[in-house]
Every structure is written in C-alpha cells, then in structure tokens.
Image (cartoon, rainbow, N blue to C red; front, side, top):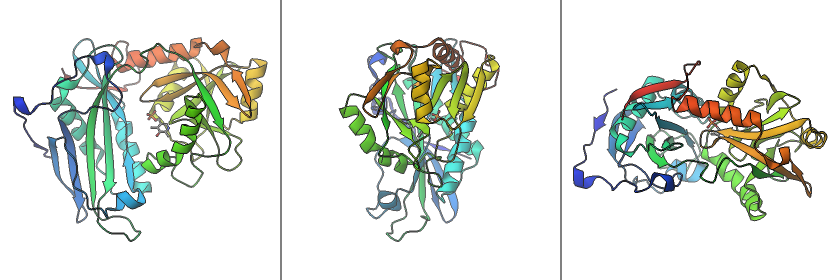
Length: 358
Ligand SMILES: *Cc1c(COP(=O)(O)O)cnc(C)c1O
C-alpha cells in the first residue's frame, strides 16, 4: 500500500504539550491522522493528512444506526530510544473480527500495521518519554453512505488518530470501588458485546453514570440473562485471585476478548500461577470475599493495563477485598506487563514490536 503523506510546514505544527505529567487521556491529538476510504468495493486513497473534522452527510449510516468499530493500542518510548507497540497484530485481527460482525469490509492486516507504523513514525515528536506515558492510538471505521434505509453501508472511512497520554496512575496504583449492577446490562449472548463497537458504550453509559453519582468508579457487569455471572468491569476484563488460582470469566460471547486479558493469562501461566476461565457467579464472589478465599481482584485493559479492585457494593452492602490494598499477585502482574511493554524486561512471548526509534 502506498500511503500519500501530507507534509507540514514548521508553522503548521501544533505546539507540543508543556508538561507530560499533565496529559489527560484522549483530550489532545497529534498534527496528523491516517485516513482511507472504501467505495465501489475497494479501499482507496490511504493518506496521512492533517488532523481535521470530517465532512459527513447528515444521513450517514453511522450517525443513525451506529455501524462503527474501533480499536485501542499504545506506542511506548523505551529508554534506549526504541518505539514499541504491544501486540498490534492482535488489534489488527480483532478489528477485522469486529468488521465481519458488523458487515463492514475487512482490511489486510499488513495494511493496518503499515498505517499504524508510518503514522506513529511521522508523529513521533509527540511521543512522551516519562514513565507511564505513551501515545494512545485509536483506529476506527465508520459507515458513511448517505441513506436512511437499514442495510450495511456501501461506503466507509477507516481512520487512525493519536492522543499522547500521561501516566494512568498519577495518584499511585490504588484500588477502586465497584458497583455491582443488577438492573442494567452491558451486553447479551448473541449480541455485539464481544466486538469493539461504539453501541456497547452507549448502552453502558446510564449504569456507569449512576454508579459514579453514588461514589463508585466503575460498574461490575453481570450477565444479561440471569444477572448471576460476573462479566466485565467498566470497559475492562475482570480477574480474581481465588484460592491461589487466577480466575477470569470465560468468553461466553457477551464479553470482549481483551488483549490485556489474554496477556495476563499467558503471563500468569508462564510465572507458574494456575489460571482458570470459567463462569463465576456473583454469589460465589461475595462468599469468597467473606471466607477469605478471594484475596485479590483487578480489571485489565489497554488504558490502565491493570486496575486493582478494593471493594464491591452489591445489594445494599459493601464488601472489601484484601483490606482495600493492592495484592501481591496484582502488583507482580502489573509490574511485569508494564516492564515488557516499555522494553525494560525481556519479552519471552514476542509480544513487543519495535517500529523505529525516536
Ligand atoms: C477494549 C475493551 C476491553 C479491553 O481490551 P484490551 O484489548 O485489553 O484493551 C475490555 N472490555 C471492553 C468492553 C472493551 O471495549
């Protein structure tokens, strides 16, 4: 694929942020983005161009029926000057799985990789260097055909934007409080909960908003049928250290298969920790906390990597895990994963991909 590059003059470049430690997730974007459009059954005009608003017809499919998918991954600055991506092949593969589910066109994995690589290298002056900082890459595909009938769009835009982000844990690696949601659900088996599409987030806003109003940072989602089994936490996958095993809900079809989730499982096995993917009922979780069988809990996802859980609120009662402290397994998995991502520790899995130097 030959990507057309729009050069920027010095006076066309946006001023860089002053303080890397003050970068807020997803609030500023680099000078340029990648775009490519799909029409007449083919992808065309791959470009790295100035970051700017799209011109969309008000009847565009995506604006009415949410035919949209996205991905999220990060580029990291290693101390030795390398620019690293973490398992980008997995993001490319998942993007295409999501596309297939929403009857959208797929993109050759090597073209996705090329677009990401060339864009990051063109925009590398934005790469922050302090510990915990990164470039957050957001590939997305939207349905742009102008029509209000319900059928798959015949036109799309695929784009990638980049946001420099500060360290997720500015106030330290601290456990969060969860609200166990037993009214609203995020997704159901047979729906689109297992693909990265914006509609899932729209469906989750009400519960997330109510939980925050009550003082909880995230929702712990239960299954859509019985409100019985633990599914995800906010937009992260969920783990428990349960009787010396690392246990996570199995992928039933309503859970997003996180790349961090898969990596945590592989890493835990590698480190000699027993892992299990199975149905986990909320009653079992409450009992496990009460008996002390559950010693740790955490969420996993690209943005936070690992987010320790300190307590759960369920049916008018609060349950505290590990005295609201970060547990040793959580801390170890977090340290190892982050060290691999930043190239500080040997990567025995071949997860980290060097795309150039800063
Ligand atoms: C993206 C996402 C995750 C985490 O996936 P990662 O690949 O680990 O970032 C988990 N749950 C939902 C709903 C998501 O959208």
